[in-house]
Image (tube, rainbow over all chains, first blue to last red):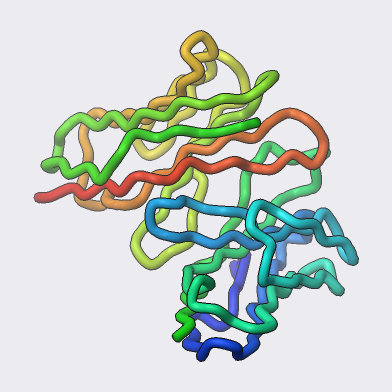
Length: 115
Length: 113
């Protein structure tokens, strides 16, 4: 039962480097999300997707880009990493709205440190 | 806009103590309400939910009642265990297409033996 899988789990970057976080879900969910979790801030939505080929901005989209080329995958990219992007990143997915009760299924998180 | 306010933490309790974690919300209409739990080193998982006023969600000995008159969804457990040590997030899901969850800031619960 894979559910939502994130890779990598840990990464250390230098300021200005780029990287991509991969999220994969095997539940045939339409909706996918990227959140960041910071101490005292809770979870903040970065970007989300309501279906293959679509993406939209969340609360804190600056400095990030996303792509949803396949229904099961949602990629989060950092083009030029900054120390302020040091965080734990969570991917989540959910059913389409017609069956959506708001329940999200989360991955285990990816801890990113930008030096 | 929609918002969720959780009581300040962290909370430390002894095993078998009674737990209450307060959560209040601001939203238009009739949102669904949720408690998520995050165990150490893991992602969040749904603990319980309530989709309409006066509904009570329950799971693993935890309960929360949707109180529209006080816009609250407080989490309670009669006797906590060490294994309940985790971060707890209250969240709301507004009505309407393409609505998204709004999370509170979370509160850390530590239960000592």
